[in-house]
Image 1 (spheres, rainbow, N blue to C red):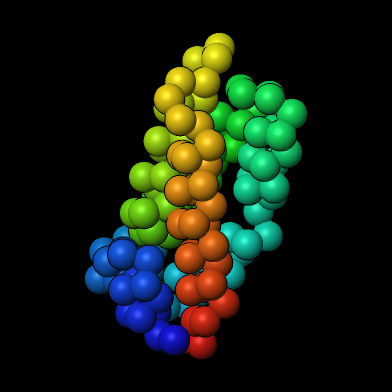
Image 2 (image 1 turned 60 degrees about the vertical axis):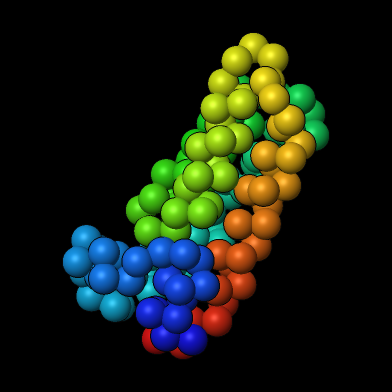
Amino acid sequence: MTLHDFYVAVGGDYAAASSSIGSDGQIVALLRAFPYAQDYAMLLRAMRENRWQDACESAMAIAHAANAMFCPGLKRAGDALAAALSHAQPEGDVLTLQESLAREYRNVIAAINGVTN
């Protein structure tokens, strides 16, 4: 899969990513590093243990990384979950928001794994 195909798969904009990040090599390096970040694992652990502040911080970190990679669906999902977790007690349907983030995360990871550049 080309980088253009990657951005189509994740609903992103290759031209915007390219003009902001730089060369295709820099984009690929950024994308390839993402699966090694521990934010998603930390989010899942914090959610299981009802540590809402830690979960909120992990969701925000995922949204920030998604923004840097120009992956808007994952950014929206991370922002929505972080907003729901930003209170002493979570607000809204946190499990649905977590599932949405999980779907977007899996989509981005699968697309990253398909990049051949």
